[in-house]
Image (tube, rainbow, N blue to C red; front, top):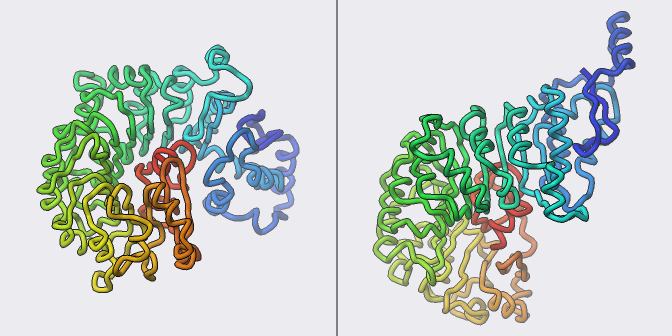
Length: 491
């Protein structure tokens, strides 16, 4: 079946029909039994899917630039490729603005076959600002509302990933939550990064609570991010977490999750990526018990326990002593910023550096001698990223000129996160440039990055990203961009 479009984007009109010329060509091919297609046109559909996936930008263009321009060129090159490109573009649907979603919705509701292709609905780049319209005008246009969003979810009944964020919060009503958690049986990943609008909060409270008779006993989600969803009630976590037996990725950063809700996660879950950052209702001793005894976290690869000690310190010195020796061997990324760590804990940290690639020790009480010891030859450090933000002993001079200083050494380290003051101070020293380090920053965070590194930073556990120091658990494969990059890498 063929397709027709003026432009290869959601913004433009689509006609889901077989053209008369295509029908005539097919009849002619059947009569003569001659296949005059080029070799590339004879490939299986699965091969096309693999090839065309490389033509989709990892980070969608910002602003109002055209998307999928490469796919558009392929789309117009032959009759065979004309149809096969549709599957690729509809599999991963990205919505930067509400008019794009409105036209997409019109197509998948008019032509159910298109809706069946959709695997990802991505609103991570979404904004209601721009196009010369006010917020009131956007509301009156009704391009993207809880109602139209529900209609899109119903049409995309094979959906696997739903990626939202704070700008979409006011448009997430109870019907949207019901579709996601009650009706879409194939859904694997949901991300609500930063959503805290009152309507979002009320929608969750209405649907996800222990007394809702329609709430299934098992929800088959594998990846869930409620990163910075600060307004969700504790009852949401009490009702939701025990119903997720297939969890692999869980981000509860800065939420009101409780110790009892964590312990209620089914033992059948196999959580490899976990963030409990800035959760003020958690108790350090109980969190350590959860991490050491719960079967669902036996194979952790990424663990984020970042806390601002000026507001709340999760891990005491005793908690650190209990936790560090028993961390799983599978762990490659560990964030202990804000934990009560002193020189007395160094003997517990050193055995970890041979298998960790990321380590965050910000706002601890380590000395420069302790830090330099991490890269002593006998420990065979594999660290690529180290966060030393907020450690009083760390200064530009100590990083360069203390005994066994780390910056002049030829180590595996690629990125060193420091306070802005320290990064600026290092950048002024000629010794920094001679050692091959350069100044970088993103959002509120500052780094020294080693130049001329052969390693591109891509790792399977990063799910497609090449960046170091991400504090947000990813729910989809691909480079981190947009609001997700701000929350994970810039905040």
